[in-house]
Length: 98
Image: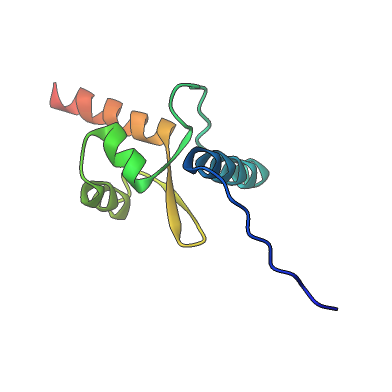
């Protein structure tokens, strides 16, 4: 039995949408500890998207994760950050600074 390789062409937006849906499905099956209700910003973000959302560098996102301030899901060697977790981190830090 011969297996044929197929090439699927899609736009970046379609790829991001598909990847996000897959990650959300995996997390829902495992019990997502950080559900989000927002529809304007994705519930799950790549490191670059999280850095833009938080207005910091990707190195800062990595540092926060290593210190345990924010959680990330690692799927196929890629890190995904939860919007609700990032917002919670901002709220805690804003209340500490005031």
